Image (cartoon, rainbow, N blue to C red):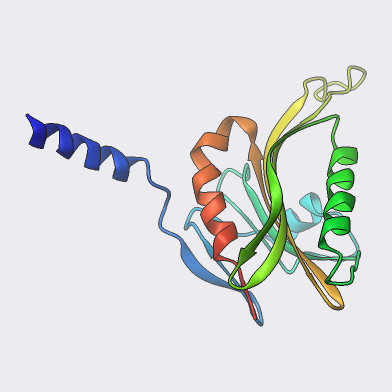
Length: 182
């Protein structure tokens, strides 16, 4: 009986483990391990999802286009010793982007000997009752981290519908801890 229970426990662990992550080169000196479900976005996807003068260094999505992972260089630069002040600035910016932000976890952590500011949260953008098709609120799960270096700030982010958070949270945390910048 104990062997049977142990077998079910082991099967359960593997059944719910995240997809195997694959080391992926983002650009020279920037690597991250990504699940095979994420594929590079098409140029049209990038234009629609990241309407900016500055395209991301890399952007990935799944086949249904419900998940987004991107690496970008922020226009905002900070002296690398001001992580606490930068963290407050980035948190304020995040709060201003959404109608509601529920922070899951935030702080500064070290990944491969580099310090990253990170925020993991759920957000809500209220719908527009006057516009047909945009009346319902939009709920998202996001994990974003910033690497502040002299001359640049790397922004690494993942987001998906809030309903998919439990499916992806473990994988996303592993992805963010796999980031390697040389």
